[in-house]
Amino acid sequence: MALTFDSDVLVIGSGAAGLRLALELADHCRVAVLAKGPITEGSSLYAQGGVSAVLDPEDSIESHVADTLDAGAGLCHEDAVRFTVERGPDAVRWLIDHGVPFTREHAGDNSGEGDHFHLTREGGHSHRRVIHAADATGAAIETSLVACARAHPNIALYERHIAVDLITTAKLGLSGPNRCVGAYVLDRGHGGVDLFRARFVCITRTPSRS
Ligand SMILES: Cc1cc2nc3c(=O)[nH]c(=O)nc-3n(C[C@H](O)[C@H](O)[C@H](O)COP(=O)(O)OP(=O)(O)OC[C@H]3O[C@@H](n4cnc5c(N)ncnc54)[C@H](O)[C@@H]3O)c2cc1C
View 1 (cartoon, protein in one colour):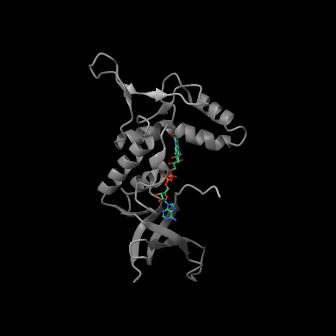
View 2 (tube, protein in one colour):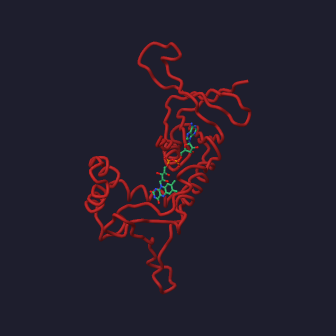
């Protein structure tokens, strides 16, 4: 028998994007998060190198924007690049506040004082600006955010639940502007399609290249 689940926001995807959104919203409303497989499985878990952001006082937003546009070889929209780069430092601080164990560089005097995060430099960057957790940064981010999400009373995580179609007011034959009000979701456990109703639906999965 099909089950019905209600939330304020349905987030499709439990990678870094989906969990970031869920944790941001959950202090204000009830959030349901779907993953098509195990909750941690996805690109986020496998990212290795790290996250680039302007974290060194000698680095600058302008330099990061210029490097990104250069590496993008004309394919990047400058406004999107600037939007992302400007928010990078705050996004990294948010991850740190949520327990991501980024690798630290020690001052060398065993005092623990003056320790700071180790930054690497990767191709296309003119400064050291890649913060990382050894060589398994994505795993550190994903497992930290999953732990925060599991501990949050307003977040319900549904693993092995595949969104197969969106529910819209037009499909339901309702009048007024067409709105998305949920999703039909295949529960790989019992093999049936359940109804996830929500006031808002957000798709965060990485787009397929095919
Ligand atoms: C090997 C590798 C190395 C990388 N290295 C780096 C790096 O060093 N630095 C960097 O910045 N980026 C790196 N990336 C890119 C980075 O990992 C991704 O851009 C980022 O993790 C995307 O996060 P996401 O939350 O959008 O997607 P994902 O983490 O892929 O999450 C997608 C989620 O959507 C769910 N989902 C998909 N379809 C459905 C559906 N129909 N129903 C329900 N759920 C669904 C999945 O189950 C999953 O939970 C790397 C990627 C890979 C693969």
